[in-house]
Image 1 (cartoon, rainbow, N blue to C red):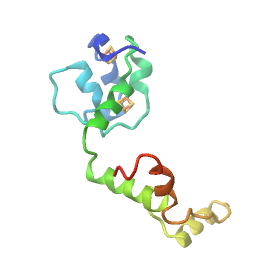
Image 2: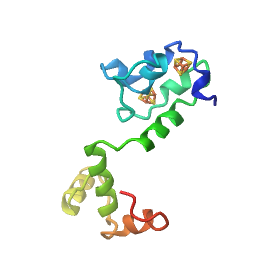
Image 3: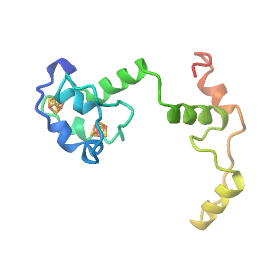
Length: 130
Ligand code: SF4
Ligand code: SF4
C-alpha cells in the first residue's frame, strides 16, 4: 500500500464510498481535495470500497485510523467504548431480552462475560486509556 502523498486526487474513492453516496463526507473527501475541511473520519462504515478501488494503491484506511487516534472520539463512540469495557458489548442488552431474541432465531441462550472482564483484558497492559 502506498502513502497518502502518492494520492493522484482522482476522486475514484469518493464515487464508491457509501458515506458520500448518502451525502456525508468521509476521509475520501479530503483525499480527493486536500483543502476540504467538511469531512469526518468517524463516519466510515469500514467497507474498504475506497481502498479496493483506488488506482494509486493508497492506504486510505490506515490514514483514517491514524487521524482517529489523534482526535477525540464523538460522544456516541465513547459511550460504546465504555459499554464494551463495562460489559463486553457495545450496546447493553439485558440477558433475558438477549436470550428471547436468540430463541426467536432458534439459538441457544448465551452467557454474557462477567462485568469488568473486558476492561481487565483490554486494559491489562496499557492502563485505563478511556
Ligand atoms: S482513489 Fe486513491 S488516488 Fe484517487 S483520490 Fe482516492 S486515494 Fe487518491
Ligand atoms: S472504507 Fe470508509 S471511507 Fe472507504 S469507502 Fe468505505 S465508508 Fe467510505
